[in-house]
Image 1 (tube, rainbow, N blue to C red):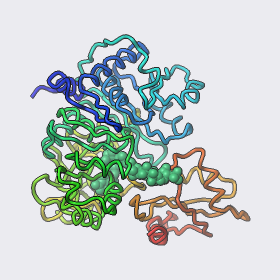
Image 2 (tube, protein in one colour):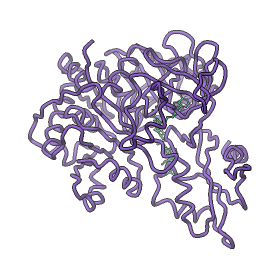
Image 3 (cartoon, rainbow, N blue to C red):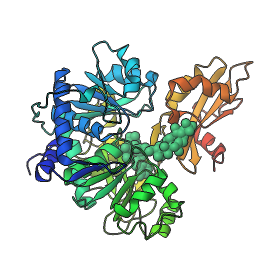
Image 4 (spheres, rainbow, N blue to C red):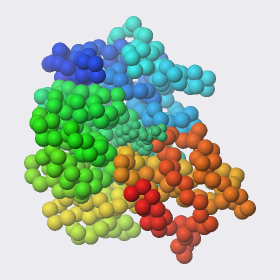
Length: 500
Ligand code: MCA
Ligand code: AMP
């Protein structure tokens, strides 16, 4: 089949089904495929007028709206690189993304316009609100040429993994997005008859590429919520066919007495990913609804790698076998030698889903790939007797809270700058709602007696709320091994019961 990029596939669906509903918004308003493409063209023209050329970055930090998806499609259409950013990021956090990615245009919410305009320099600042407002929508021009993207052209940068130093921009190509979308469409039997409850944010792979690309390229509809709201999701279940969510969604749904077999009678698929789904949550949800949640495994750098089967056994505690066309192996971390099935090692991935490299970081990119093209995920696991992958841990220092990644180093650096702090270690501990949550373990500077609250106040202005520790433990010294390395596993064990 000739290569069809995401935005061309969506335009194809719009030509076939102009009046079909793409977005169903709270309050009952529907937005058709034709309307979405019309707005995409207007935004594309506006961005071209702003000077965006193929290869230029267009950053977006806005509240969730259907117009933001039109912006995403517009950037792809003109050959730009789409850079979505979490709305929770503070100005301090945004500095890094803006200086590293050097976007031509930043689309921000109207409320934050002044903050960015005052330091803009060469950056063009546009605004987009959640009520159909903002300068981005002002343009009268409604035509921009469609860039003929090749499979290897970059389509997006998503920032991830700041384990050492700052966050790195993972560059994803048009082929990465299109191939994974086609693979998942087939694997999960997605069709134009589907109605997906969309309650995820749209600045990550899960909500943007997995959920929206599948909906838009198949002619399906999104029951589109501004965020996860338990009542709203429960209310939509009787009219939906698919839900995609992080484990926290399912923990909350499984605890809600309104969720039962009758309520989910029209549902055909519940997908979970971005963080481990506890086998107990899998069982509780099955008990309540009769549905086995389909767990899959992905990364920002790779899109989706493995999935439990649509038909066949969905095994709790596993993320299923490799998706078709994708190679997944488990190797010895040091030597890179493949391990026999059953043995625990480093998970590596190769396929058309795997990203092109880290933005402006060729050495870091090279360090994460083997010579034979496998990408080292940093996840640790094994392959079971049925060829299913079991993730048992992570080689990387990372906490996943409610599906959001938190990099301990970033928080430790901020805490360590406090004048009353000698050093700190940040770890993730089990949390009943978020899966894991962030705990800071702090050693005071000599003679100082800082309290947890003052440390939290000190770091708060710099750090998105979801990264802020939910507990600060003051200790005399951090546990270290003979090499002097802080033993985070020991700290995780020590504080495992804090929220349990
Ligand atoms: C909100 N808060 C959080 C989180 N979310 N704190 C820690 N971790 C979080 N994830 C804060 C709020 O700011 C608030 O703080 C307090 O917690 C309670 O807010 P609440 O209303 O309960 O939060 P929520 O709005 O219900 O959010 C929980 C959530 C949300 C629905 C789980 O975090 C979410 O939508 N997560 C999905 C993330 C995601 O899409 N991940 C995919 C990326 P306070 O009250 O103190 O102000 S990973 C990916 O894409 C890979 C490739 C993959 O495999 O999918
Ligand atoms: P990110 O790069 O931000 O998308 O985070 C990707 C990481 O999330 C992976 O490397 C895993 O550590 C984790 N992850 C994603 N899906 C799952 C899953 N189903 N089970 C366990 N961990 C997961």
